[in-house]
Image (cartoon, rainbow, N blue to C red; front, side):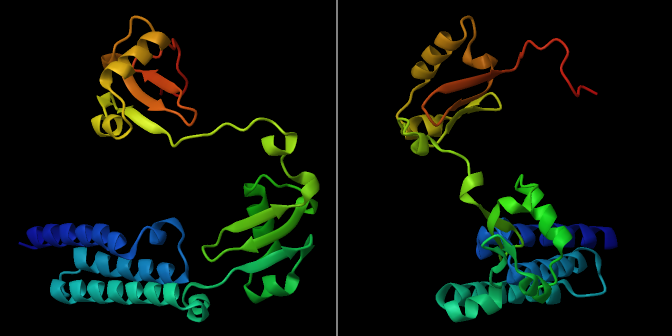
Length: 236
């Protein structure tokens, strides 16, 4: 009976962990603030006990999960409505580099080391700190960087080139299956897609296509099951 109970409790724990992020919102997954960090650790501990600790009643643990979720949701709501409380609940950004100068006092205050700063800059493809005008440690632990103007990339607008409008990519075939909803939503048809395929690759049919997408410039890109690569890399 213990095996059956553990199985049922584990399924319940996984189900609750899948449900809770939908209640708290996508921000919990995309950018974890201090509130989200504490909530995640607590929920993980409670879910683990719910799954395996049969000495504790499952109803108590489910109640704890519900309460923690409600508290986290309430704190997120308060942070959304009150700017003054937002920094206390979610934390606030910290300036690490200002006007090209390292803010040692700010770094000491948050226990942020030069090694961590160097690593964060390298992750932004910056190996020379002299390129940085501003660097800010965000609430989620990521570092945002503004380069000095001399080291910024040149854009088409800077060069005076003609700018073309772009659209959001539309996936037309996924895993060999035609995505009918995307076709209808964008006013496209199967016949149109087959015609595009004939223009791109003669002798191929939609059954040969593994993936197809209409790109940002409305160009259609196909990827086929048969790639024609005789010796693919990483095949072991």
